[in-house]
Length: 311
Picture 1 (cartoon, one colour):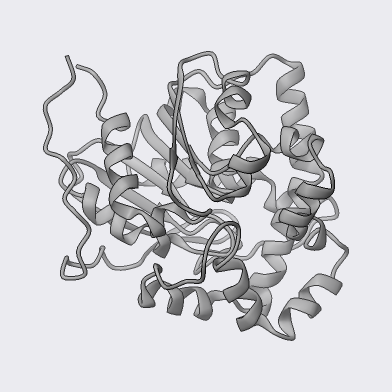
Picture 2 (cartoon, rainbow, N blue to C red; picture 1 turned 120 degrees about the horizontal axis):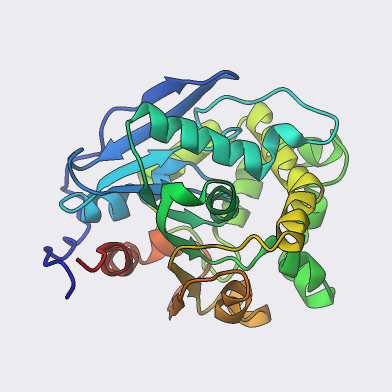
């Protein structure tokens, strides 16, 4: 029997904002984060994607705040978190190091095992974290991604057209940085309105303002480094995990958008089930890629149902 718990409340523009922006000092720099809900509730960590910040989760977090202690960090290289110095193999933006930051933040907050959900790049960090630190994740939700290795292996004209940024951002610095920097606002709006989206009208003005504020030349560079890592050292880590038989051990729920690239080109449940020892469930939502912002109520309800574990 599932533990009885109130349903998530509908996100509202009149709801109180999440807590003050906080920082934790790590060895390499500061990681920014906010929390929502009471500390005695089960912990749920939400990881954002490209080209965003933790602000993408505001409405989802508010809807879940009665039942969870929600933690929303800015990934390293994004938002107000530190921008690491370059390394020759782009290891400073590897998903392994990014996952390590989240573990360090969880330790700082006194969290043991926690629920984990990641969208886009945050989903890739969440995948690596679950492989590297399996005892820390009770349940995992991944939003609008397939495994990185499988997505690169699937590369053809259709994928290259849909996800051209995967191949543009990995070009050697400073070419993509300079090209994006010449029209940063237009580039940002194009990305936020793309991948099955129809503009940015569904995004909160406050969130858009945060994305604009944080899309600086330094952040553009570290975001490119994120993708360079994914096309190199992350693939090496992922292949090593597969070769070693490392698989996700906890229950996994996959969400993807009906108008997105994952729906059009991949079979997300099957691909993730092949990488998971536990049951994989999933659902397609009537959305483009930016599902938590386009359908915050639906996403909050799905997360509530999945992370309220049976007693």
